[in-house]
Length: 109
Image 1 (cartoon, helix red, strand yellow):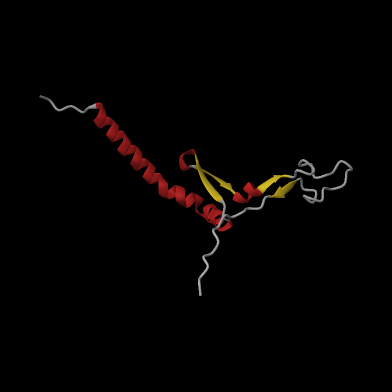
Image 2 (cartoon, rainbow, N blue to C red):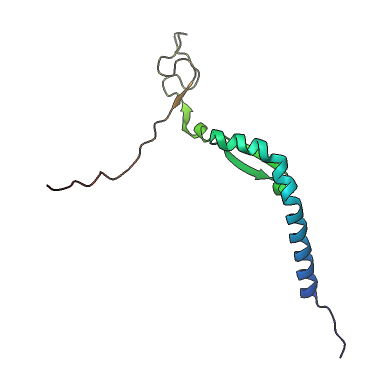
């Protein structure tokens, strides 16, 4: 009986090779984005890896708190042409975040 390499063995070889290639490119990729990633972390931004780690997208989560002004419907001006007072003429308002923290326990004396 002769020894043969099965398709499963070939898949394992290719997967190991792919894992090795990915690991070998990881360190240069981290060095490439180190400065901008550090700046993003400093500002509290989200870092989204793109294209298998070859690209980055940075996002400020504070934009989640913005919404169109309901008074002027996002135009920044009233029907009369004067600036909207609710949004100060920007057309957007900042939503307030409500926390649902439980009340602190009371100590009995």
